Length: 64
Image 1 (cartoon, one colour):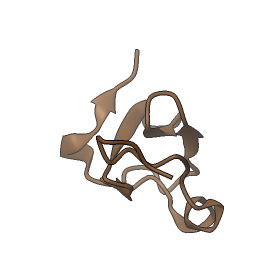
Image 2 (cartoon, helix red, strand yellow):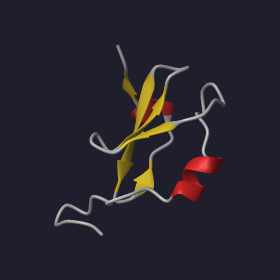
Image 3 (spheres, rainbow, N blue to C red):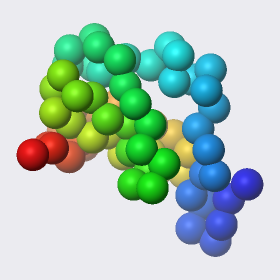
């Protein structure tokens, strides 16, 4: 399930079905390796901390 750093092994697929980008209201994709939710439309990557997606634009990483 999780390691010593509280990194989730997976994000619940049902959660991914209801979450949208707060900037564009568009769909998100899950990047398992980076532990982020990606918004292609906004070119932002939202972090997942302790199994909780942080859906704040200020906390998101800009994608090139």
